[in-house]
Length: 355
Figure (cartoon, one colour):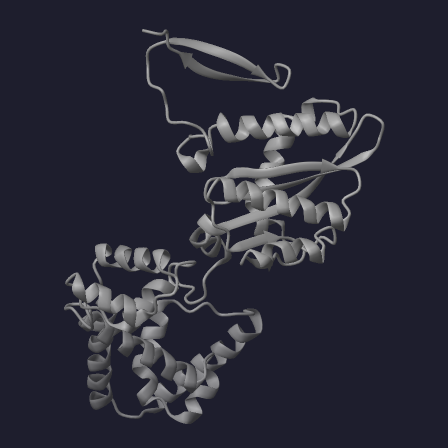
């Protein structure tokens, strides 16, 4: 604002000087001398650094300088014109800043609500969010909603159901299967096939073999289905990777029961993250601390760990409750400790005396 006022005053002074002065030999001689000084300075200075006051003065004098006079200056006429436009822009920008211009900004509460709706409902479009906001008393345009979401990724990525949300939506009727390998002390490789129910995180069935052939894998699928039938668990989706050990007969058994087979993408272990997480737990809590002798030993160890995992081990996704365990017994009674897996871990419960 100060530069704008000073610019106006200088223009007025320049106009007054133009009206009061006449051409004279002395003035022309002075101009020629100044031009020569400019040429000398150009040979000594590589780049001139213009101060705001210099630009202000040249912008004021721009209209009264003839075209020939610009040849002796360090700037071009277009440069002076650009400085003039910038000064005018600043003047009007300062004037507009005195009052409210344009639409009022959205309240922070409304912005947070837009982000929350977009994050919790990935398939909602801008107009759907706008309709929900209208019900809550917020009048917001779809364009404003888009602007808010574009500044707040990943909530701004609209459309499409993510893989994580898909698994969460179908967890009650989805069972995942996977293999992992265990090497014995005699350097023989054994394989463990297990099935996990996503909603409860319960291991439905687990079996071990040294030769995971198609017939054996198909029989384990039947065993898992029998166990699910006993637990009254409905299965509509079977999820597994593209390992060749999952034979065509394996898929046929599940499809015969009305389940749809879903294959994870190539080189994407996180697509079956629940199964991979259980493999990590089994290794860290059990198998990495034991030397496996053979097939029977591995079957007994895995069976005991599965029982411990389902009945006693707390799970964070279930509010620290076991996948298939009983409700807390409450206080009272004597605390009893029972060793599992040869003392590798322990289970604790309360023993109540008979009345």
